[in-house]
Image (cartoon, rainbow, N blue to C red):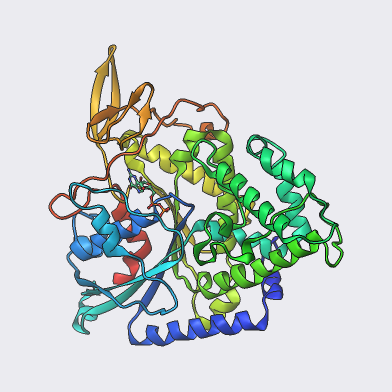
Amino acid sequence: MGRYGIAQIVKFSDILDGTRIAAGGLADFATGIVSPTIRLGVTGLSRAGKTVFITALVHALLKGGRFPAFEALAQGRITRCYLEPQPDDSLPRFSYEQHLKALSGEDRHWPESTSRISQLRITAEYSPRGLIARNLGSGKLHIDIVDYPGEWLLDLPLMRMSYAEWSAATVAASRVPPRLAHAGEWHRLLASLDPLKPADEHDAIASSEVFTAYLARCRQDDVSLSTLPPGRFLMPGDYKGSPLLAFAPLDIAPDTNLPRGSLGALMERRYQSYVSTIVKPFFFGHFARLDRQIVLVDALTALNAGASAVMDLQTALTQILTCFRQGSNSIFSAMLGRRIDRILFAATKADLLHHTSHDRLENLLKLIVEDAMTRAEYTGAGIDVAALAAIRATREASVRQKGETLECIVGTPLAGEALGTTRFDGNTEAAIFPGDLPGDAAKALDGSLEGSLRFVRFRPPLPKDGAYPHIRLDRAMEFLLGDRFA
Ligand code: GDP
């Protein structure tokens, strides 16, 4: 058995967790009898493109458009789609209308990003493909889209690590580049703390603040690291300011015994509460109930930041795949007949590259995911990889310069974006050559691309004939939903 298999997770869970998922699962089962339901998880690290993807997906289903690879829509078999009240009263609703409004009109801007879990139910009426099925009547499918921060999936390893083990591993990682350059203030604070001295709440709060600032710095675009648990420190959701987050690693050995009443013991207690109160309910209550999953990956920002960011992204995807590994939720699947059976890894914002690089972006992600599958000892659901732009903000043009043809993208860069000495005002169109992705995807991991690519952010486009332009969104829809409209 691998490191994070089912046996460990079940051993850590208490009986309450089991009841909670059984309750959720039985409710799903009951609604599933009335009308088939598919629960589609949409995840990815912050700024990967979850909000934009869901808004574009729902817009496509409600308003139609050019989606040739999504057969049910292209063949006109989806006859009607509408939003319905969501089934889970305890989950916030995904603010589709608000996000669409942000993307509309002269003052359009990208919508506010995902910061917590949310859900939206869209119901589709369709005519089935076969003659016999059609004669039996029209079909109806509820699609429950669940949006949640990918950071939360990176908490899975905490369920089987003690506080001392996690502390030692986190401190050790911060002592090597590229993290070392950003850990100065936290290391100074760590050096001043004695884990064995009597607990002091101020030390716990100060540690957690300085440690969170270190994580946030490692996440910024120029560093762009991905593996930065605990997930709620960067994406607190409803736990912002909660004492459950008032802990941090201490400089201790993995087998340290922390005496009662010490600072270390206080941190250890909070860590354990974090795992039992936040991490486990998320995994058992929400994650274990999904049928399909799309993991959005902003590979371009990682490429911008360099090889260490791409390698750290690979580590994060390995951990994410560990969560999806066959068996991770198989007890619950066996009990309730549910299991994630398809996962799509999608590199987002493909419109920041010329189409000649789209397959290369896909190959790069494939390389990263295949390696992650090997490292996670992954067997399980069907996996596919795609490069897409849920909303395409650019068009293409060939530009001749100094006797050379450059394949450029054209759009309106956001105000404040810069390229070389040019700073954009947010109103002027520009043709930009972002660089070429290499034919050999392995070059993205060996450092030889450093500095050769540069991506800027563009203003969102207006819809054309009522639909947003996209790249390969229809392929993603076909993979994730297509078979359910048979
Ligand atoms: P989230 O944190 O995963 O919810 O990320 P968002 O969906 O909010 O996306 C973060 C940012 O990425 C947006 O504000 C846009 O600037 C950019 N973005 C997302 N999707 C696209 C896309 O399809 N094309 C382009 N050009 N930019 C995108």
